[in-house]
Amino acid sequence: MQKSFVMLKPDAVLRRLTGKILTRFEERGLQILAAKMMIIPRAQAEEHYAEHQEKPFFGDLVEYITSGPVLAMVIEGDECISLIRKMVGATNPQEADLGTIRGDFAIQTGRNIVHASDSPASAEREIALFFQDDEICKYQLPDQELVYEEP
Ligand code: IDP
Image 1 (cartoon, rainbow, N blue to C red):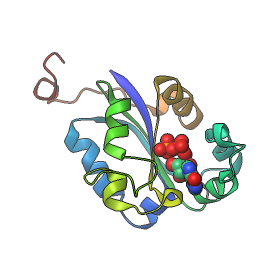
Image 2 (image 1 turned 30 degrees about the vertical axis):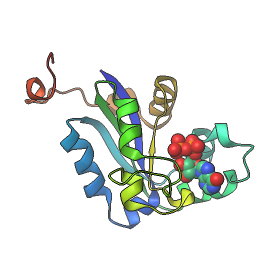
Image 3 (image 1 turned 45 degrees about the vertical axis):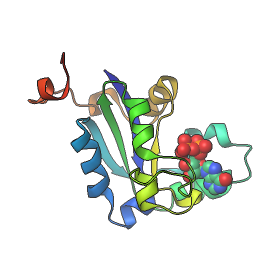
């Protein structure tokens, strides 16, 4: 089982899309281990996006991500990092396939409504940046043998 850090950005929250997006992850069979609404402190946003520090859009990105509440989550499932990236779609919503979250709900890169870890290393780093260990719930879903061949 793999864990991914997924965050519904302020535009998703303010557009009241959180329920619709969460439903997609749940209906896929994924398990939500942690979820919290928060306004990200500036320093934490800068750390989260540290790899983009030198990019021209870095300032706007930090403004955007700290502009309102986000829903930060830890989601678990088999190979879920790449699976969730596929569900999220391309960074630029204009290039995102229909049926993906960005392809269905967003138009511009700077307002692309959702973040999802792109590798096991970033998932580990991002989860640690947003959650304490005791905020991540350990529990068994009752339908795992229906979702997985070998739960
Ligand atoms: P990702 O979110 O699909 O992993 P990254 O390249 O890691 O994409 O970029 C992080 C975030 O930075 C994007 O989701 C988007 O919000 C923002 N971003 C990336 N490129 C641009 C850009 O060219 N203009 C404005 N914002 C951008």
